[in-house]
Image 1 (cartoon, rainbow, N blue to C red):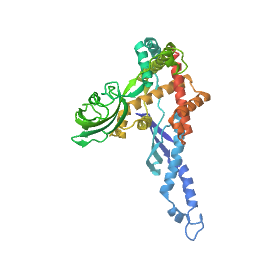
Image 2 (cartoon, rainbow, N blue to C red; image 1 turned 45 degrees about the vertical axis):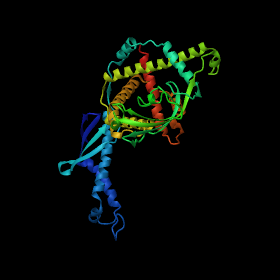
Image 3 (cartoon, rainbow, N blue to C red; image 1 turned 60 degrees about the horizontal axis):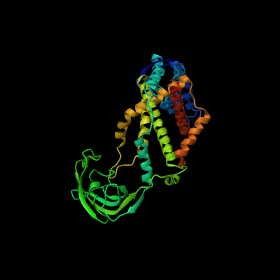
Image 4 (cartoon, helix red, strand yellow; image 1 turned 120 degrees about the vertical axis):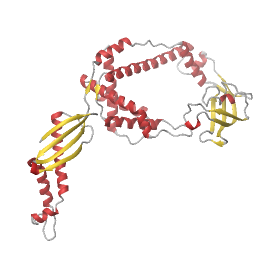
Amino acid sequence: MKYTSKKLPNSIVEAEVILGHQEFLNYYQPVYDQALSVVHLKGFRPGTAPKDLADKAVDKEKVFNEAVNKAVRDALQEINAENNWQLIDQPKVEVLESEPAKDIGLKFKITLTVFPEVKLGNYQKLVKKILHEDPKEIFVSEDELNKSINWVLNSRAKLTRVNREAKKGDVVDIDFSGFLDGKALDGASGKADNFVLGEGKFIPGFEDNIVNHKEGENLEFSVNFPTDYWKEDLRDKKIGFKVSLKGVFEKQMPELTDEFIKGLGNFQTVEEFKNSIREGMKKEKEGREKERVRLKIMNEMVKNSQIDSPQIMIDKTLDNLVNEYRATMQPPSGGKLEDDASLRKRFEERAKHDVAANLVAYQIAKDQKIEPTPDEVEAEVNKFLTHSQFSKRPKIDPQRLYDYSYGVVQNRKVFEYLESLK
């Protein structure tokens, strides 16, 4: 067997293989003999018909294709062994010629997608520089603390129905219907219970028209939709609304006292409660900062690496991104989500970056011999099953879950190694 190979973009390799006449005959003859032995002609027992008659009954194309498949399989195994390639897609085979007269038993081309070579830059130096030059002091300001405490107080506020005109800060219940040019507008009708006037949950100007009105009133007004509204056909359009004000409620905020705090958990004083909130907020900010630095490290490592990402990896990542988006997003009221083609175009650059980042992390793990232990992978699997909605589904591929969990743990350990370089 003789072959030549050349590398193409996206980690594709083309190999052109030539088998001499006798080499290919070694594959063809056994297949032909087997086909000949089972030929059944009327008046003859299987295998006893004259060869010239039996030969005419043999499906030569089927024999040739089976022989080619066997030859390609063995050639591919030998070529892979010599080059240490790891295939990540089904090889594509094209027969170029078969001319025994020229001593070309078989000539074919194999197109392979191989696991990409990743050439890392000097990532140790890069990581040390980022860790030393990009520290950020983490603290919780009094304003941030007060906003968090106010959220807790708001969540415990009592609502009292009032017989007065609504004002900003009140909670109201309404029924509403929208109209364009006098016709009912799809997706612009419904109920809105317990929303706070002035928080801007509706189209700008909508809530202002409810202020200064009382329960039981029926209102009619128009609102100009924003020029950047998500539905292009409604941008800068004047939409009429009919609103029935079903209820107006005044919020009664609790006082922040030791007695109130005792009802929230294992706290005795307001100061204990504040310290707990402050510590929780600090840990959350530390986690976000850690992720920010890790993202910066990875982005810089990707920039400083040479990676020829296979298209199949990018396509699979795109599939996952689109599926995750569709699983978590709900279409806007009266609208629908983008089609797959638009979503794939929108997520394409992110998919390319995600593939490159995973390959960089994989190469570092390989070079540094970073491997998760079985216990670590099992713990990650259990964590996934505990916290994920997918744990309720009866059908889940154990191998995919294991591979996913293995990757999560390995990436975590890679970053722990990188952070230790400082």
